[in-house]
Length: 492
Image (cartoon, rainbow, N blue to C red):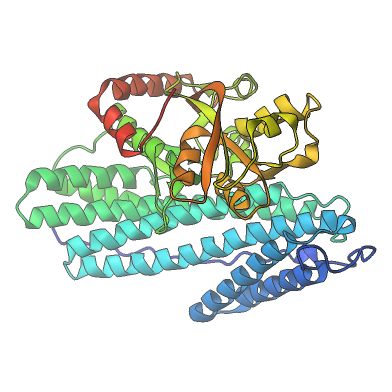
């Protein structure tokens, strides 16, 4: 079984920087230096340095130089993000918010482009290993390439969501809505391309495993791996980029297996919060794991479909589902009446409460929290944020300025540890996970009696039924308790 196919040449494109965001003038009606020791001018200098490095990457042809400029851009935009976060200048609030949002998006884009390049290199290594008959090594390389492409897809999606949320009102940067309208389809296209390349790489991974098993005389495993490769290539037969090669691979494998091609398994894209341990989180190597991720894989295996996981910023995840860029949200989403107007939920699979955390040496009490005197950190778009608004702000107990919302809970927790906020309020299990071993402790459990469910589009009734049947099987299987034990889940 040494019939190999030609490698599809990877076309790499660097996205154009935000040239529409050249500043005209920044307000200087307030002092340059503030309590944090940072200035608007310093933030803007880093922002411009990031744009310059991005332009250099765009104009370079040498891959080594492109990587160098991308890393420079990432460093500069990260510096801008951190510097702008320390500036206390009311006259430049809108400018600072824009620079932070755009910098955050372009840090993600730099990481996405670097993951794309790295994945391409590893993919080429894997194909060379296959040509040399090193099937086991090839399978490892091709799996790594697929993981990198999937990470790039998640980062493109993250950048898209961030840029769509940028507000140009009241800034010195002009109206950038046309820029956003132009760049979003490009980013969506890049994300889709990376998603398809991840599937393509995994098709080759399972092809390598099939060849290795055949060489070892294990025909059962060879056939099983070959069928998985066929399903993956089969899902790409209509792809503009990969269709011709995937179809050829599919047909060759069908011939080698000596049987009619199997029925193609559906593949669903699962949106998750990439910073929500223990339920879903991105590891240092770019792979996504967690309690919900492993649960979804178990259900997919039993119910006859495949899954691809994509990390999405939480405050924009429902619009991403509704726009059909993902097929479900399986990442500790609380079932609420408001969300039920937008999505359909599966049956509940976890019950939980909110937890308030404070620094270990803090004298803050729940009395302070309920009186509205404490500064509270939350993740934007969560039920913890909703609880604060409904029970403290809307009741007049706490001024709105005491609520600090962050893009993810690790950022809110970091703000707690460095003294920017007095308390964090968030789901119990992730809070317990982060508090462990840190200079923090659980102050109290807030009795909210919430439930997690899997969210799908309202029209996807068949998928919802499949997920409900899968949940029934999972929760009746010993694996359910094994998973809860593995991830140290405490449930109500």
